Amino acid sequence: MTRTLFKLFTITFILIMLQISTVQASHPYNPERHIPSIHSSTDGESFCVDVKNTSRVTYTTAMNTLTTVLYNTDDGWDELNNGKISFVGHSSGQNCSDMTSTLLSIYKFRYYVLDNPEDFSGGTSAVIDCSTNCVKRYGPTSVSGHTHYDYGHAYLKHTAISTTTTHTINHETGHLLGLIDGDGTCTPTSIMHSVAYGCTTNPAWPTTADINSVIAESNKS
Ligand SMILES: [Zn+2]
Ligand SMILES: [Zn+2]
Image 1 (cartoon, rainbow, N blue to C red):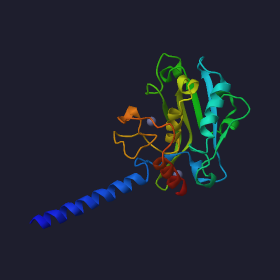
Image 2 (cartoon, rainbow, N blue to C red; image 1 turned 180 degrees about the horizontal axis):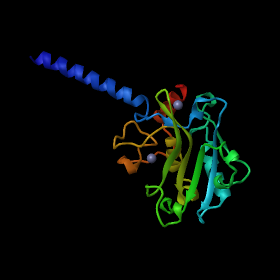
Image 3 (cartoon, helix red, strand yellow; image 1 turned 90 degrees about the vertical axis):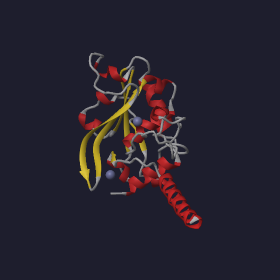
Image 4 (cartoon, rainbow, N blue to C red; image 1 turned 135 degrees about the horizontal axis):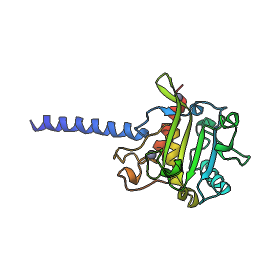
C-alpha cells in the first residue's frame, strides 16, 4: 500500500513538473491577437508617436524615449527572430494624428502620450477604460486562428515617457505583439505579469518567456 502510494505520488510529481516546464517555455496567455507584421521579415514594426493630448512632454522627448526602449536589441523586443520583429520609428517629426491617412497607414504601432489616459477625449468622457495605460486594437481580421489588426494604439501616461519607464513601454508593446495581461499567476516571470496583476515586480524588459512567446507567434502564419 505504501509502495503504491509512493508510486502515485511520484507519478503526480512528474506530471506536475512536466506541466511547470511546459508553462515556463513561454508566456502562457497568448490570445493570438497582434499586428501581422510580426510574421514578416520585410514589414517592420513601424511606429509613430502623438503628444497632442499632453502638455507635459515634447514630441522630441517622446520619440527619443520610445526609440531608446524599442531599439534596444540587447534587452528589448527589437530584432527578434532574424528581424521578423524590427521596430522602425517615424523620422519626419509628425504626430500620428497630423499625418495624411496614406502616411499614417504605414504606422501600425501608434503611441499616444496623455496627461491622463482618461482625458483623451478632452476630459468630458473617457474613451478608454484604463486608469494608467492601455492599448486598443483596430480593424480585426481572422486568419487561421490568429486575429490580425490593421493597427493598434498604446496609450502611455506622460510619466512613462518623462521617466523612461521601460516596463510600461515594453508591457504595452507586448500587447500589440500579441501578449495579454497576467491573471494573478506570476510564473513564468513576464513583462505582462506586473505588480498591477498581483506579482511582486515590474520587469523592465521582456523576459525569456515573453521573447519565446513572441518568436513562436511570429513563426506561425
Ligand atoms: Zn498572426
Ligand atoms: Zn496590460
